[in-house]
Structure formats: structure tokens, C-alpha cells
Figure 1: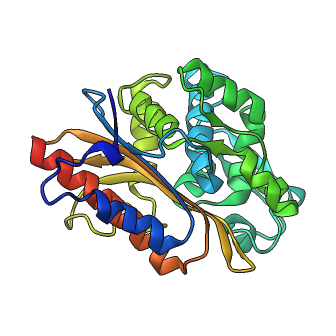
Figure 2: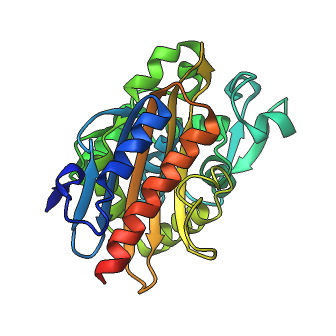
Length: 286
């Protein structure tokens, strides 16, 4: 059952105005969805609006690639040639490009680590190609019953045209639906799910976003997404993931901030504040 956040006026202390303050502070668009995985109980704020994913889309790409591993089309230990022509342009984050500017042979397992844990644009584009391209990854997501997460372009394409990033889009509700399917073991073997969960838990980007205001030691498996800032406007500052509550239950959370004029610290604080809001709400109910 979806519970619109703006109707939750009965919360202790009425925290709804506090959430609306986040919107005012970032000077942009904010969408949030939080779902208790085992029941489907949901809190949302603009949960059905489209937002550009940026590197958040490496999560569904990783799922699609691992599904191909499960189907025997790919293997984790196979060597993949990353040619010099595959390297994303300067300005995009790519440890592979920085470490191996002439290209390299990399195992599929390492490509997944680079793409998910380190948000490497080169690794993501190579994985996207191996998975059959944007249409194939979107079809995989649709096969899981998720209709509002769309993969349409590559990192290289987004670098060439900033407008392209708006085609890689998701609603907060769609993303938590995908996270919930992932946590419940749909679309992947147990081994593939465990591997992707480990890679997301080891993600070192965005420590001040979903994780920023949670109690120390909270387990968070997440994927961030961030665009460039152009003329004072940042198209995407995002974080999505699975958070373990104190009682062991899992909470799927997606927070998207788009077309924002606030500086990065304010945008990240907004994501952290929204996440703490839903953490407190679901923890208090248990």
C-alpha cells in the first residue's frame, strides 16, 4: 500500500513540514520512496515522478549482466578486452581509464566491481554492451514487473549530450520496486544476488547521502548517481539502496534530487535527512 508522505500529518511532532524544508533547501526537485521489503508498506514523496538516474542505472545493468551469468551466456571469470576506444572521455569517472589508458583485459567479475563499487563509466558501458544494450537491460527490468525504470543511453552518450541523461530515468517507486525484487531473489540466482549485494555494500561513493545520518555501523547496500553542475544547476544527485533496520528487516530506499541549484553539501544533506526520516518512521513502528 502506498502512503503519500504529505498525508502523514499524524507523525509524532508532524515531521512532514521538515521534509518539505528539504525541497526548499535544495532549490530543485526531490523524489523519495521507502518500502519495507517483507510487507510492501511504503512512504513516498513524488514517488511517481521521473528523475534522471545517472550512475544509479549501473545497478540494473549489473543485475542484467548477472542474469546472463546465471543463464550461462557469460561467466564471471571470462576475460573481457576493454579497448582504448571503449574508454569514456576525460571528465567522466573511470579508474580503468586512469590506470590503464591504453585499455586492458579485465575479468567480468572485475568489471562488475569497477562499475558498481567504484562507479566506473568505462566498466558500465562495457557491461551494458555485453548485456545486449539499453533495450535488453530495460526488457530484463520489465520482465521483473518494473515499468518505470528505463535504461536508454550509455555513459559515453551522456558525456556527448547532457540532455541524454534524462532518458535514463526512473521513478522513486519504480526503483524501490526493483530493489525489493532484488532483495526477494527475483531475477537472479542466490549466488549472483549475494555478489551484487556485496559490491553495493562496498560502494565508497556518496558516504554523506543514504548513510550520512544513519547510526554508525548500519549496513547499507547502495548505488549513487551524480551529474555535472552546469551554470549552477545539477541535473542529478541520487542514492538508492537497501538498509538493514535494527530488527534485521530490510528497507528499500530511493532518493532523487534533480535540477537543483544548491551546493553539493546541501543536496547530500537533503538525501541524508530524508533517509533518516524514513529510518525513524519504520524503526518506531517495529
